[in-house]
Length: 285
Image 1 (cartoon, rainbow, N blue to C red):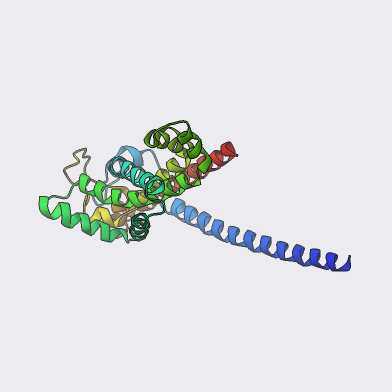
Image 2: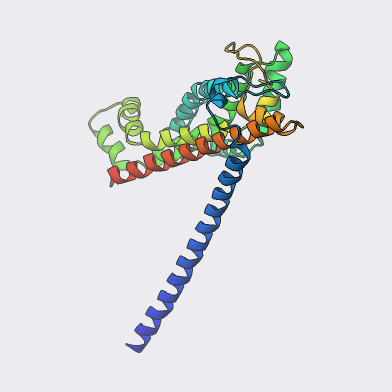
């Protein structure tokens, strides 16, 4: 009995220590999150008004907003998702269902992990060399292609892992009833893992929302409203970079306000992704 009590105390102490360290780590991370939100809000409070979303980027010394930059970021991000998400889902499905234990599948997963961790500026230079240098024109389409290269590896990895989490009994039951494999994948496996796949797509959107380097080499910038995807187009990260480097206080306030909005957007996407994933786990349980 004495040995059991001693063992219980040691485990209780270790558990309390681990719990305390976990709480400290959580508070440490939350402190920096609140600090970042607070600083961006305080520095950009002068520009956080309706004009931020209704007026164009201003010339030096004038008031304005970031309406064209928000539109450009939204358009290029949606185009990137339209290009990259289907490719990523199809590639992840092939890896999980047709090349799970093959050498080719392992090689592709390794290359996808390299692309997942590749610096975004490298992908921007790749699209610059492939598209901009040949067309001799910066464009929103080139920017969307660069962002799509960032979307694809995230969606591939998420789709692959989500499909591998689906129980093998579902595959065996469908195949035993004579269901073709392609129909099983489309109607059973993808439906069972759709919450996780959508989570991966939202995380990819969160990643590309704040990318600046690829757009500097592809979409460049545009002070005016433009919906022509074959021409240069403004984006929030590039405008933040340009305004933050300027000597004008009004531009600095707009840069801080834009950073605050982007941070809130990425935070909201992360929370929505976690909610969808948690709800999916509860449903499956």
